[in-house]
Length: 339
Image 1 (cartoon, rainbow, N blue to C red):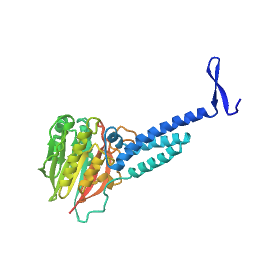
Image 2: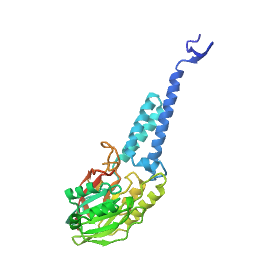
Image 3: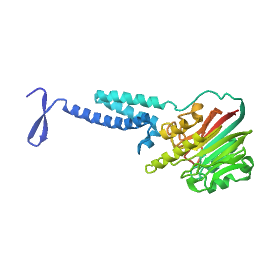
Image 4: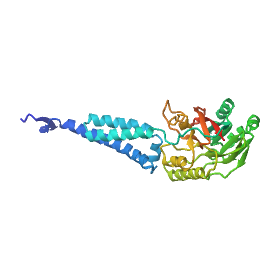
């Protein structure tokens, strides 16, 4: 018998010869296929990120969690190593390097505004999830005393609670889209407000012009549709309208709320690129701090809640605050308006 072969049972009363190492080669081929599928899936998402395209489902949903795609990429690399698939190892290293590159914060950081400081402005942005987190929001407002409060998904129970006398005294100025469920939104302000055109959307996105120590500051609440599998087109359109609003803004401006998008979405980056807006979390070193879902353990999750400001503002500090009964963390930012 050839020393390179061995007998295996094929059926009762029969035998066949199989080259030594054939089983190992089958395992290697299976491992190579598994690694290739993982790398292909991650590679498509990374390719869309590099091309500046959000593409179609499931790419927009996966882009929201781009940094966490390092896990399947590392798994693919390990499988390729065990399967002795050299091409897969090279591809895996390339994909891993691209992920590391795009994990870096995106957007303008710039320097400090040139003009003298005019006023401190504390901003709180919160999605209270169908009004459920309203009581937690009110407690947070009482504790941190922001000057401007942007509240998404503020239906009639939320508006009624925010009409309490103590809140009316502190925030006498308001602009709202009065609707129930996720469609209602409200801006509360210590500063006098004038009306401004809203941005059209499925959910309410009110706007106003605040008088901050004699300086007109444009305020825009952001709450576009999320990129659900059957709503990606609507999501992209409504983020585009926010980019148009950013492009049209003149002078100091704040755009805040639940953008349902991260820095890895091209549609969100166009908002930053359209005007002079900068991400306050980015300016304060918290560009990757997750805001949703708030129930995710540790660092897991993604940042879809943002406060964007023009370069008339310096960002002094930011923190994400856990609120009960809502799946979003609130974003609290300390700004300084410069003249």
